[in-house]
Structure formats: C-alpha cells, structure tokens
Length: 160
View (cartoon, rainbow, N blue to C red):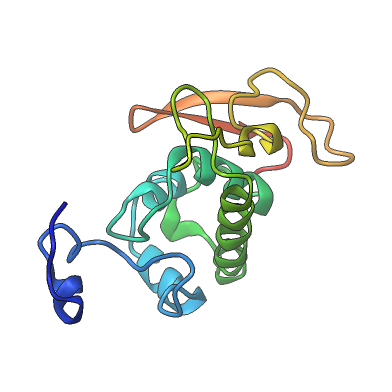
C-alpha cells in the first residue's frame, strides 16, 4: 500500500501513465478514436494496453470485441469511426455486468468477502473454443488464437 495526498494521486509514479478509467468522462468516443487512429497493432492488443485505457483485461476485451462484432486481429488504425463508436458503450456494458456478477472466478479470483464471482457463466466467447457462437443467426463457432502471448477467443463468422 502506498499513501499519498488525493490532490496529486494522478501524478503518482504507479498511476501517471495509465489511460483513463472506462467509466470516467475522459474515456469517450473522441478520446478512443484519437488514441487508436495511428496504432499499427491489432485492436485486441491496443485495448489491453493500460496506457490506452485502464482496467481492461483479456477476458473483458474478448467479450467486448464479440459484442461489437470486431475481429481481435483488425488493426486499430483501420477501424472506422463508426466501429470505434461502438467500443465505448460496449466496454462499459461488459465491465458493468462483470462488476454486478462479482468478476470472473476461473481459478483463484475471489471478491473481498471471499465469495466467488459469476461472470464466467455469461461468457459469450471467452474459453468457449470450438463451441457454437451464441449470437442469434450466426452459425459460426468460437476460435482461439494467441496474440501478444494471450489467448484470444472470437467468432470468425460474425467478428470482422
């Protein structure tokens, strides 16, 4: 634990390079569009970069990209403004549902009171390799690839 004055917390060496928090007013469509337009990395890797947006983890990025129909392989700089616009509300939606469910308990995650999280029961793609896509009328199946040393789960049929 590191204590410091609230007024200067954003300048703290552990926090000063973090991107905005997803539920903050500074995380919005204009910010995200500007942050992504010159990135030559896949959108999955960009969204995992804590300097871009704080707090997004692998599970939640997979779920967000599925919700928005964006392939994890698509280059960040190649996303249209309309596609980027879908990301901010989707990120807030997925994180909000995960928080309500107490997070995702896959191995050892526990809430502060020791209870398990239950968001893993709502996964649409994460850890569902070779299973049918849950989007209505899709007909595809979930694939797994490795990106930046992390598993990416997605449906190649409905995520472009």
